[in-house]
Image 1 (tube, helix red, strand yellow):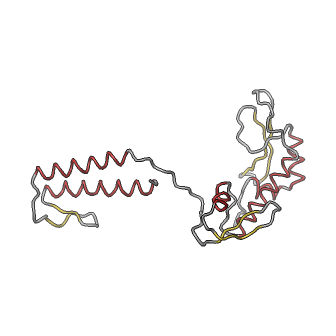
Image 2 (cartoon, rainbow, N blue to C red):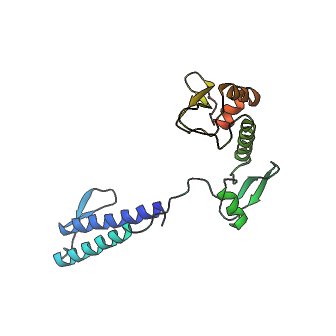
Image 3 (cartoon, helix red, strand yellow):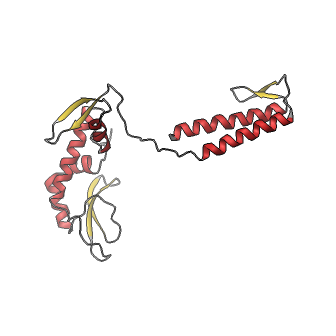
Length: 205
């Protein structure tokens, strides 16, 4: 069950519990949540208690249901068009048929709603590949003593800068020296790094 479905069912059951409780006091609740109308027919306590027990049992069972996290990414439905980045870098439109190929593209993030989104992702891959020419190897040693340099964006100064860390590996790429990082910025370009690697949106001012 999806998270949305879980909360919808739980809300329904809780509402029934609340309405049942008010009916014992001779009151009904309207959709606007204001108590205005008296219930014409009183419910016997035994009947009320049975209904309450049944509803509580349903709520407890619902709590045991495994909730599936909903994917926030856009996913096409049958007949929708989407774009992929082909192995040669070409952007190609496809029709979603819910096939293994379609779902395979979606699983690895190669499924885009628009041509513009696909183009942005392609440029991001290009910038990342160019930066890797200057970065450390993936198995670089982290011993708490060696400095590892990374590129970041300074919002206050509106600038692409370099900093280092010895302990926390929180960036996508690291460089052995500050000079390597600076050479990477010069070679790839500050504007391209800012937009496609650091994903900083341009100011509308």
